[in-house]
Length: 487
Image 1 (cartoon, helix red, strand yellow):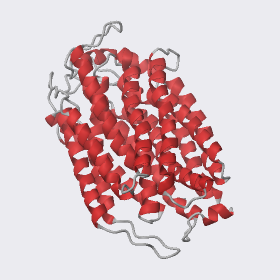
Image 2: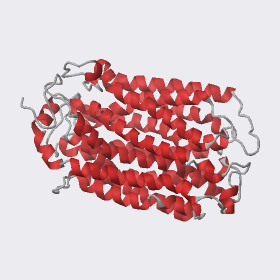
Image 3: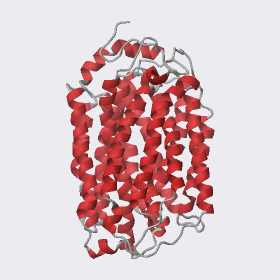
Image 4: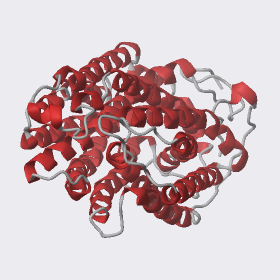
């Protein structure tokens, strides 16, 4: 088979990924995770302080259900918009490509509005803060689906786990940038370090630039990543270059029944069952991961009484585990199949959560002296590393499994299905967990129990997904097999 600019001959049935181009495409995901890392690290605490002020209470747990509801409303909008923009981009044809217009417009509008969130918080405007958060999410959803769909558009099916690993590493680099910024401009410095952490904020003496800087820097980096993508990726040209490789990829796909190219034909029953099982399990593992992720900042500040910078370091530890998982998750899939690789990741995550639960119940949290914070538990860094490693095994293989089940004409639509499932989970889980925190006997120290139950249910559902290894091809080893993709 002739070599193309994007794909070169290799043991994957004659296919090899172009690493350079895949890394560049990863700049789209870089911007996405950069945005959400800042958003999820700061917005729940912003809402907590604003709701406490509005209700005239200092009881943090009392307002968590409201925090959860506000975070969920944004995700509800995303649940509706992701499939819409995915389908729209599938049918879009411009001289810039079908995904690029959405990526550029969405990124620039998101970058303009994002820095207004801390401004409105600083001026104690609850309604304004919630409204701007919703606007940011809308613009983010405009480009999230097309940005993610860009990779499978130009990557043959057997190579997509490898490509997805690289894309996710780029995303976590974006998340790391957000964490580094957050460590320099920590939320606790803005709120103050007295016994009443709201004192400086309520007195109006807090320096707004401490919380504004991460949002401004994130906006600048988002725009820069979109421009790099635009000036280096010619979407239309690449699609023509890889057309023959995409055809070969269809023949090597790991699916129960061959995928029809005709959009009018119904999806094969076996493939439909696989899709529903994957999306159902995905819903539950996102319930777990997003649930504890949403409230971890508040868990750190209000339950452990630790400096908020500790949570950022904890997220960094999880990010290191995730990057490692993205590097080796595809290799493991090449050995045992994507299904059992995901099972391994779910098992690792479940063990980490179980250990966290035991230690959380066994070790009492000391009350800090006035004007000080407790030391962050070292065991949480290890747990977050293992959880990050395990969940990366899951994520690096689950998305390729979904888009494996569709033709190239429906990638945006099926990407929409994947993210609709995750966003549905992220809509439900903050509300549910917030309401649970109002229940007598259920407090922050039971966060790992909630996540553990969700992971267990996800594992049961995913057990019924077929482990398809049809069309198996030779797998490289060592560094050459970075994220080996064969199913």
